[in-house]
Length: 477
Image 1 (cartoon, rainbow, N blue to C red):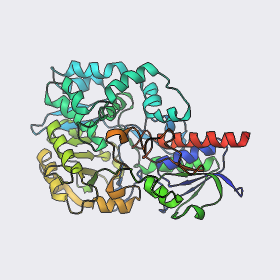
Image 2 (cartoon, rainbow, N blue to C red):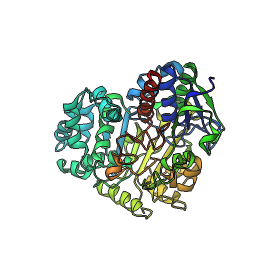
Image 3 (tube, rainbow, N blue to C red):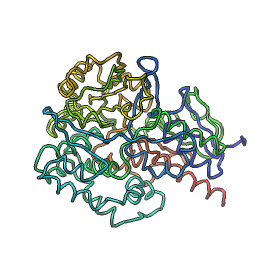
Image 4 (cartoon, helix red, strand yellow):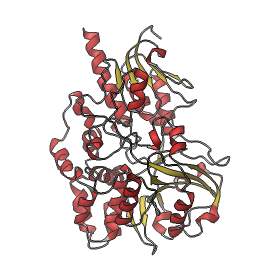
């Protein structure tokens, strides 16, 4: 390595790995430092319960991963990444055994919502169908606006923005019956904010359109496959990765022209000596997550839920909103809204023959301490009677455990910052340089920057572009 590196990256989550790989493939010298012994951040796979059961401690299903412009610019398949698609991306079951489904097919999705809302759903998504690449380049690529690039399709982006900036509750006014409202409520709830929150319609629409364009796939072998593929590509481009190296101060790192942090904003400020630069940044609610080793598939009463990679357990828009309001307001909901993933329905190698891995999480206040296992499992039993009888082992993680597992999850907030109000759009603060900081050589690339949470690498991509532009100008001078 040269005596002065072009870039040093701190944190080997998907964004840190993407930023490092983007710079390395452009010929810049790059070193990456990760505190844990393996790369991955929120995209890991571990045996949390019993031998042979491979769980994803955080993300498992990747609606925006398969269609990510950042990932698709790299030959990650050559480094072991293979997407597997369940028969249905998502199902929202009801107590009577029926379900609203999000399918690859718009028609199948619309039919599951009932005759009074099928047409409304088609009209909602129709203007954006077949345009995922432009959508992803502009909506997921909105960080490009801060790097001097204009939208690829300004008219499409404006049309989407008119809907996206609304609350999910406003979006649901167009529907007459519960299946459609519950479907959209569950999609919007992924941002961990009440349904009346400004701009929650945007993520809900993105998740729906991602399903119709690319599905909601899982990586073969688990989410670690994404991180390992990024790391493999980075090394092939000449980048160097150091694991088991916790960085506490900027002067502990090798000399470099740029330092890029895949960390929370407050951690960056502490390490880089930026004082109270992000003192106003807000962290959102947490979750209680349970990873299960099961003796068989989840016994959903809904046949659709048995075919889906992701299952939302609400079941209604009102119940989902009530649970979210409780968590944001500092109370543990009696009946949590659950987001669940069952990757072994499409990847049987994740568990011994005939067995399954499964996880579920419900929202809780930031920093909440306690055990929500009973509340989660009582909710599951409503829609999958006999579920507890199939549990071989469980690994639980509340806010303190999540924060200990990943330093970016402040108070257990795995979204790396509250995704409500203006902070959903203006992360980490009101500035024309969200990836830059008060220190001219220090940059931020985590989910605390646009376009926000998700295993898609776009925050890392945009931060790398900001660094690349600065390094190029420096070389020209």
